[in-house]
Amino acid sequence: MSMAITFANALMLFTGAAATLAVLRAAAHYAIRVTLAAPCVRETETPAARGLAFETVRIPTANGRQLHAWLIPRAATGRAPGVVLVHGWGGNAQAMLPLAGPLHRAGFTTLLIDARCHGLSDADTFASLPRFAEDASHACDWLAARTDIDAQRIALLGHSVGAGAVLLAAARRADIAAVVSVSAFAHPEEMMRRVLAAKRIPDVLARYILRHVERTIGHRFDDIAPLASIARLRCPVLLVHGEQDIIVPPADARRLHAAARPGAVDLLILSGDHESFTDMERELAAVVVFLQRAFWPCGISWPPERRN
Image 1: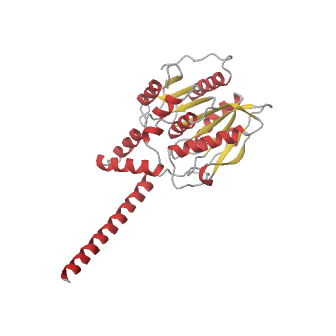
Image 2: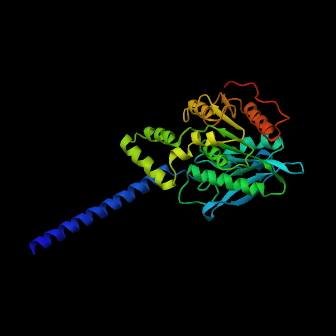
Image 3: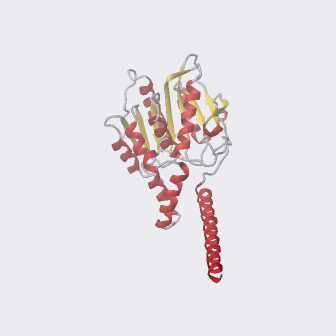
């Protein structure tokens, strides 16, 4: 009898400990998600503030969600080339507005999207680089379906996480005419380790967080890393990076350039940081020339005179 009671007590203790551990683990996972979640910042300015006519649109994406986006059509009639612009982590379409004017004046229709969980787009369970890529791809499909767009001339342009996302999206498709990657990191695990180290997270805990993030997003970092994506790309790619970038070092851009097919990718290392460049007008002109060359390969001289 006493032996049965002892076993029952032990079983109760074990069950209680397991339940406590499960609660602690769930709390830890919730804390990780909250800590790493992107801030949702809504736009305070529209393209109208820059003298650009635009249309606010909603674009269906994965998981039954919709994206908020601004469509800035080309002024001329006919089927226009299109450029999808993707912001970085915690950003929104407004962050990409400095590019809208030069692209519009060059004759491109531009589509500036908010990724899920960002700006005015629908929320989802979490944001991630693969979900940014899904959103970019759905935006391409939406744009290509328009009768005023040349579906053979659609480019992707992204910044930071958005840059990694457009590389991943383009690597999964055969119909992207060109990609412009601005301030992309080489590998998401390396980027996250830098962030966690800055927060003074111990290495053993950082490893646990990284593996949990992989399980949550459903992808191994090695598989979605820009280093892997760029090696699979067949369209023209322009890598742009600030020489004074302390968030993502310029060495990441050089590694991406080295990982690509020989001669397939142009690299511009410019004076500037993670968010902007010293001579923004001149640098945007270089992006326009690259896109023109990608859309009309027989008509534009490239590359412009630059330091690599």
